[in-house]
View: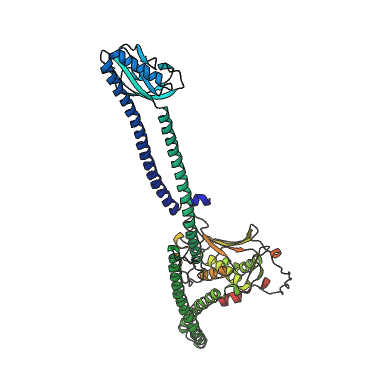
Length: 497
């Protein structure tokens, strides 16, 4: 798969394009060399034949037909290897002189240059070879063929063609290998930038793209991106600090205002005034809940790995949260289904995890209409992953907004008419990040107009055999105690909301 992905990279495609251009250039160069070399050798052969023809023509003019026959026989006798080819015949192809017995079939109806094969058909007794000759008619209807054995020339041409083919093959192979190595080196550096960028996009804003110190183009790109990230983090921290400071500074006067309104509510006798004061107290509670949530998220984001991490039964913890919200679901006539594996253990902060689960269940109940259904599942996947899923049949979240709902104060368009401050999933995201969890949002019923929502959180499972921790039995909860396994009570959750 890595090789296939390598072949799809733009650097390899660029190298492949360069390889095609380079191979075409080499092919044209070699073809030109072959054409000039073969043409030169063929021209030399033709010049040799022309010189022999000129000599024979001179003998014919001086000595006639008999003299031409005599000189051809003498030349054949002086050339035992038959490098020169002669055939002198009458107009009906009756041999008069030469080292061929028959007229080549290729020359039966031609007058000029021919290429033919020396074999039994022309009375050749030696090994099969290639020849080139020129034919013409002598005065009186006589026919003369003068040629040369070009087997050596043909062999040389084949050697050159083979060398060109091998050269092209080696050139293509080396160009392909070079392109692959070059693109691999470039892709490695690009992949480092991509991997780091993905981690930064997933929330690890402290990471930076590594450099090699070579000050090449990639180092300059990495330095520019790192400076941009530093600036972005600085601006984000400034905005976060301002919002956290505002929440912290306004919480105290809001608390005083709320208490004064409550005192007013208790002291007035006018029913209308009491109703207005009650609404004001409710609004003040909502503002306080928003500021408390902001401060809680800020503490979680700065708390990081300093949370109180201990082995926790995720199934038992979620069971406590479900028990807390079952009555709320019953008030809306909602079906509340649970499939909890109490053997699933994770390492985490019990209070933070309970808060995360409570927010998810509260959202599911809030955004699911009456007579809807809600499902909560805790299970293991493989040996190293614990999965928490909270599903509902509510309005769902559009696909293009699933990545944005974890931002502070962001609310889906359909849910703006419902109570809330847009901080619930931000808190869930912060807690999941502390516990190295991955959150996935998906539609529960993709084919419905209201597809519902399934929130899946995958966290590393706790495996005692990997840690040298001695198990300690927890004391049994006292009768009436609403906090099994140390989970917060409903009153505590209400105070945090």
